[in-house]
Length: 237
Image (cartoon, rainbow, N blue to C red):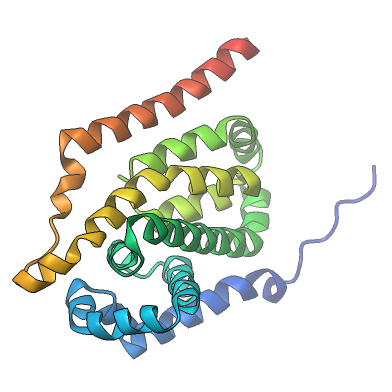
């Protein structure tokens, strides 16, 4: 057998992740996280609506770019951005823009982490990681889909863990895209009604996510995704 290829130099493997960490440090130093709040959205709503009215397409593209950066850097404020999308573009286009931005940002972080660390972990973990990789290759889409449908685990962690465990990129991207649609649609729908909330000087009622009419269907979808794993294994057996 030919000798295994030597590991890549550290700087080649780490540069994407180091760039994201540097951008994250810069964002915190500039106070970007303070702009990702409901108070900031309320204060800037007139200017933002003016930008949307003047150039709708550029506004949507700019919104997606901001969303990509927030998710890739794991900054807090994705929920506020989804509310803003519904407020600025309506429940449908706001949800579409948020799903696109969140998926692209998650994929960017996934690829950076895999490029930087997966090779090292694969050498150190040995047979255990090999079994995990095999399981993720077979059923990873369904496991990740259930986590996306019920966002009980921090979004950034669900972006990083599959990359480090060796999940195939196509499965990660597909499960992320499909899995975040229901909750994103709910938040964008709440955001579409923010006009009255702003006029009353209040805050959006995000507890609606825990209402039985919303939480139970999401739970049902998550259970169905896990049933997909069971069915595939049953057929394989």
